[in-house]
Image 1 (cartoon, rainbow, N blue to C red):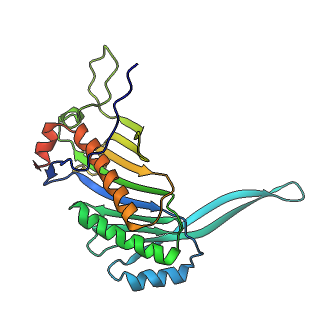
Image 2 (cartoon, rainbow, N blue to C red; image 1 turned 90 degrees about the vertical axis):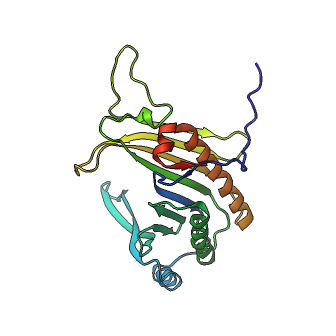
Length: 262
Protein backbone atom coordinates (compact mmCIF):
# COMPACT_ATOMS: atom_id res chain seq x y z
CA UNK A 1 0.00 0.00 0.00
CA UNK A 2 1.42 3.37 -1.01
CA UNK A 3 1.78 5.93 1.79
CA UNK A 4 -0.74 8.74 2.06
CA UNK A 5 0.41 12.04 0.55
CA UNK A 6 1.96 14.37 3.10
CA UNK A 7 -0.32 17.17 4.22
CA UNK A 8 1.14 20.66 4.20
CA UNK A 9 -0.17 24.16 4.87
CA UNK A 10 0.43 26.71 2.15
CA UNK A 11 0.14 30.06 3.88
CA UNK A 12 0.95 31.83 0.62
CA UNK A 13 -2.20 30.51 -1.04
CA UNK A 14 -4.65 33.27 -1.89
CA UNK A 15 -8.39 32.86 -1.56
CA UNK A 16 -11.16 34.90 -3.23
CA UNK A 17 -12.38 38.03 -1.49
CA UNK A 18 -16.11 38.12 -0.81
CA UNK A 19 -17.96 41.44 -1.02
CA UNK A 20 -20.97 39.87 0.70
CA UNK A 21 -19.44 37.25 2.98
CA UNK A 22 -22.09 35.00 4.57
CA UNK A 23 -20.33 34.96 7.95
CA UNK A 24 -22.70 35.85 10.80
CA UNK A 25 -20.14 35.26 13.55
CA UNK A 26 -16.37 34.89 13.63
CA UNK A 27 -14.78 33.79 16.91
CA UNK A 28 -11.29 33.55 18.38
CA UNK A 29 -11.38 31.62 21.64
CA UNK A 30 -8.66 31.17 24.23
CA UNK A 31 -9.26 28.63 26.99
CA UNK A 32 -6.76 29.31 29.77
CA UNK A 33 -7.54 28.86 33.44
CA UNK A 34 -6.81 31.86 35.61
CA UNK A 35 -3.61 31.52 37.61
CA UNK A 36 -5.02 33.50 40.49
CA UNK A 37 -8.42 33.96 42.09
CA UNK A 38 -10.54 36.59 40.37
CA UNK A 39 -12.92 38.58 42.53
CA UNK A 40 -16.23 39.65 40.99
CA UNK A 41 -16.19 43.29 42.05
CA UNK A 42 -12.49 43.80 41.32
CA UNK A 43 -12.70 42.29 37.84
CA UNK A 44 -15.85 44.22 37.00
CA UNK A 45 -14.19 47.48 38.04
CA UNK A 46 -11.06 46.70 35.98
CA UNK A 47 -13.01 45.83 32.84
CA UNK A 48 -15.13 48.96 33.20
CA UNK A 49 -12.03 51.11 33.59
CA UNK A 50 -10.02 49.52 30.78
CA UNK A 51 -12.87 49.07 28.30
CA UNK A 52 -15.17 52.10 28.36
CA UNK A 53 -16.17 51.28 24.77
CA UNK A 54 -17.38 47.79 25.79
CA UNK A 55 -20.18 48.06 28.39
CA UNK A 56 -20.79 44.98 30.52
CA UNK A 57 -24.16 43.54 29.52
CA UNK A 58 -24.49 40.78 32.06
CA UNK A 59 -22.77 38.69 34.68
CA UNK A 60 -22.51 35.04 33.70
CA UNK A 61 -23.30 32.40 36.28
CA UNK A 62 -22.78 28.66 36.63
CA UNK A 63 -25.55 26.74 38.36
CA UNK A 64 -24.76 23.41 40.04
CA UNK A 65 -27.55 21.13 41.27
CA UNK A 66 -26.90 17.99 43.26
CA UNK A 67 -27.68 15.90 46.29
CA UNK A 68 -25.78 14.82 49.38
CA UNK A 69 -26.50 12.04 51.83
CA UNK A 70 -27.39 12.70 55.47
CA UNK A 71 -26.68 10.56 58.56
CA UNK A 72 -30.28 9.38 58.70
CA UNK A 73 -30.07 7.97 55.17
CA UNK A 74 -32.06 10.67 53.43
CA UNK A 75 -30.84 13.06 50.78
CA UNK A 76 -30.51 16.78 50.77
CA UNK A 77 -30.70 18.59 47.47
CA UNK A 78 -28.67 21.72 46.91
CA UNK A 79 -28.24 24.43 44.31
CA UNK A 80 -25.09 26.51 44.03
CA UNK A 81 -24.85 29.62 41.90
CA UNK A 82 -21.40 30.99 41.21
CA UNK A 83 -20.38 33.77 38.86
CA UNK A 84 -18.14 32.68 35.98
CA UNK A 85 -17.48 35.87 34.05
CA UNK A 86 -18.92 38.78 32.09
CA UNK A 87 -20.45 39.40 28.69
CA UNK A 88 -19.48 42.64 27.00
CA UNK A 89 -20.58 44.22 23.73
CA UNK A 90 -19.45 47.33 21.90
CA UNK A 91 -21.85 50.18 21.31
CA UNK A 92 -22.06 49.44 17.58
CA UNK A 93 -23.21 45.86 18.30
CA UNK A 94 -20.44 44.48 16.10
CA UNK A 95 -18.32 42.73 18.75
CA UNK A 96 -19.23 40.48 21.68
CA UNK A 97 -16.79 39.31 24.34
CA UNK A 98 -17.14 36.48 26.84
CA UNK A 99 -14.59 37.26 29.57
CA UNK A 100 -14.57 34.36 32.04
CA UNK A 101 -12.38 32.77 34.69
CA UNK A 102 -11.42 30.17 32.05
CA UNK A 103 -10.48 32.40 29.14
CA UNK A 104 -11.72 34.81 26.50
CA UNK A 105 -13.99 34.38 23.48
CA UNK A 106 -14.05 37.34 21.09
CA UNK A 107 -16.74 37.45 18.38
CA UNK A 108 -17.22 39.65 15.34
CA UNK A 109 -20.86 39.73 14.25
CA UNK A 110 -22.07 40.55 10.76
CA UNK A 111 -21.07 42.34 8.69
CA UNK A 112 -17.67 40.66 8.84
CA UNK A 113 -14.89 42.93 7.57
CA UNK A 114 -11.39 41.48 7.47
CA UNK A 115 -8.99 39.32 9.45
CA UNK A 116 -6.34 41.86 10.50
CA UNK A 117 -8.66 44.19 12.42
CA UNK A 118 -10.57 41.20 13.85
CA UNK A 119 -7.40 39.55 15.18
CA UNK A 120 -6.01 42.86 16.49
CA UNK A 121 -9.13 43.55 18.54
CA UNK A 122 -9.21 39.96 19.83
CA UNK A 123 -5.63 40.27 21.04
CA UNK A 124 -6.61 43.41 22.93
CA UNK A 125 -8.84 41.32 25.19
CA UNK A 126 -6.38 38.47 25.44
CA UNK A 127 -3.71 40.83 26.74
CA UNK A 128 -6.11 42.18 29.37
CA UNK A 129 -6.89 38.61 30.44
CA UNK A 130 -3.16 37.89 30.69
CA UNK A 131 -2.64 40.86 33.00
CA UNK A 132 -5.66 40.27 35.22
CA UNK A 133 -5.86 36.46 35.36
CA UNK A 134 -2.19 35.49 35.01
CA UNK A 135 -2.68 32.13 33.27
CA UNK A 136 0.39 29.95 32.77
CA UNK A 137 -0.62 27.93 29.67
CA UNK A 138 -3.39 27.84 27.07
CA UNK A 139 -5.46 24.64 27.12
CA UNK A 140 -7.32 25.37 23.87
CA UNK A 141 -7.10 27.89 21.07
CA UNK A 142 -9.75 28.01 18.36
CA UNK A 143 -10.85 29.92 15.27
CA UNK A 144 -14.50 29.47 14.36
CA UNK A 145 -16.63 30.93 11.56
CA UNK A 146 -20.39 30.44 11.38
CA UNK A 147 -21.88 31.14 7.95
CA UNK A 148 -25.57 31.53 7.13
CA UNK A 149 -26.71 31.29 3.51
CA UNK A 150 -30.42 32.13 2.99
CA UNK A 151 -32.16 29.76 0.60
CA UNK A 152 -34.64 31.41 -1.73
CA UNK A 153 -37.87 29.60 -2.54
CA UNK A 154 -37.05 26.52 -4.59
CA UNK A 155 -33.28 26.71 -4.01
CA UNK A 156 -31.47 23.57 -2.87
CA UNK A 157 -28.32 23.26 -0.72
CA UNK A 158 -26.55 21.60 -3.66
CA UNK A 159 -26.50 24.98 -5.40
CA UNK A 160 -24.13 26.20 -2.70
CA UNK A 161 -22.31 23.11 -1.40
CA UNK A 162 -20.30 20.67 -3.49
CA UNK A 163 -21.40 17.72 -1.37
CA UNK A 164 -24.54 17.22 0.70
CA UNK A 165 -26.04 14.12 2.36
CA UNK A 166 -27.81 12.05 -0.28
CA UNK A 167 -31.32 10.53 0.07
CA UNK A 168 -31.68 6.74 0.26
CA UNK A 169 -30.93 4.94 -2.99
CA UNK A 170 -33.97 4.35 -5.13
CA UNK A 171 -35.98 7.17 -3.61
CA UNK A 172 -36.28 10.37 -5.63
CA UNK A 173 -36.64 12.69 -2.65
CA UNK A 174 -35.82 16.34 -2.18
CA UNK A 175 -33.77 17.21 0.88
CA UNK A 176 -35.80 19.30 3.31
CA UNK A 177 -33.35 19.28 6.20
CA UNK A 178 -30.17 17.58 7.38
CA UNK A 179 -27.43 17.83 9.99
CA UNK A 180 -23.97 16.64 9.03
CA UNK A 181 -20.86 16.90 11.20
CA UNK A 182 -17.30 15.80 10.46
CA UNK A 183 -14.18 16.06 12.61
CA UNK A 184 -10.73 15.77 11.05
CA UNK A 185 -7.33 15.65 12.73
CA UNK A 186 -4.74 17.48 10.63
CA UNK A 187 -1.78 15.10 10.08
CA UNK A 188 1.57 16.58 11.00
CA UNK A 189 0.04 19.57 12.79
CA UNK A 190 -1.49 20.07 16.24
CA UNK A 191 -4.92 20.95 14.82
CA UNK A 192 -8.36 19.45 14.37
CA UNK A 193 -11.28 20.68 12.28
CA UNK A 194 -14.93 20.42 13.27
CA UNK A 195 -17.13 21.04 10.23
CA UNK A 196 -20.93 21.22 10.45
CA UNK A 197 -23.46 21.67 7.62
CA UNK A 198 -27.13 21.89 8.41
CA UNK A 199 -30.35 23.50 7.24
CA UNK A 200 -31.97 26.06 9.50
CA UNK A 201 -35.75 25.79 9.09
CA UNK A 202 -37.96 28.79 8.53
CA UNK A 203 -38.76 30.49 11.82
CA UNK A 204 -41.90 32.05 13.20
CA UNK A 205 -41.00 35.23 11.31
CA UNK A 206 -42.43 34.73 7.78
CA UNK A 207 -39.62 36.87 6.34
CA UNK A 208 -36.96 34.53 7.78
CA UNK A 209 -36.93 31.56 5.43
CA UNK A 210 -34.78 28.46 5.32
CA UNK A 211 -31.03 28.89 5.43
CA UNK A 212 -27.94 26.77 5.02
CA UNK A 213 -25.54 26.90 7.99
CA UNK A 214 -21.83 26.14 7.45
CA UNK A 215 -19.95 26.11 10.75
CA UNK A 216 -16.16 25.60 10.68
CA UNK A 217 -14.20 25.35 13.93
CA UNK A 218 -10.42 24.87 13.76
CA UNK A 219 -8.71 24.32 17.10
CA UNK A 220 -5.71 22.97 18.97
CA UNK A 221 -5.73 21.43 22.42
CA UNK A 222 -1.98 21.17 22.83
CA UNK A 223 -0.73 23.15 25.79
CA UNK A 224 0.51 26.39 24.26
CA UNK A 225 3.00 28.92 25.47
CA UNK A 226 1.75 32.45 25.93
CA UNK A 227 4.18 34.38 23.74
CA UNK A 228 2.73 36.58 21.00
CA UNK A 229 4.73 35.10 18.12
CA UNK A 230 3.54 31.54 18.81
CA UNK A 231 -0.08 32.64 19.09
CA UNK A 232 0.06 34.71 15.89
CA UNK A 233 1.58 31.75 14.00
CA UNK A 234 -1.07 29.34 15.28
CA UNK A 235 -3.91 31.71 14.42
CA UNK A 236 -2.55 32.25 10.90
CA UNK A 237 -2.39 28.51 10.29
CA UNK A 238 -5.87 27.91 11.68
CA UNK A 239 -7.27 30.71 9.57
CA UNK A 240 -5.74 29.08 6.47
CA UNK A 241 -7.35 25.76 7.36
CA UNK A 242 -10.71 27.46 7.85
CA UNK A 243 -10.43 29.16 4.45
CA UNK A 244 -9.33 25.94 2.76
CA UNK A 245 -12.36 24.04 4.07
CA UNK A 246 -14.81 26.82 3.20
CA UNK A 247 -13.63 27.56 -0.32
CA UNK A 248 -13.24 23.86 -1.11
CA UNK A 249 -16.83 23.07 -0.16
CA UNK A 250 -18.78 25.88 -1.87
CA UNK A 251 -19.83 26.04 -5.51
CA UNK A 252 -19.16 28.56 -8.25
CA UNK A 253 -22.77 29.70 -7.90
CA UNK A 254 -22.08 30.50 -4.24
CA UNK A 255 -18.95 32.46 -5.11
CA UNK A 256 -20.90 34.56 -7.58
CA UNK A 257 -23.67 35.21 -5.07
CA UNK A 258 -21.15 36.32 -2.43
CA UNK A 259 -19.47 38.73 -4.86
CA UNK A 260 -16.14 36.90 -5.08
CA UNK A 261 -13.18 38.72 -6.55
CA UNK A 262 -9.65 37.33 -7.02
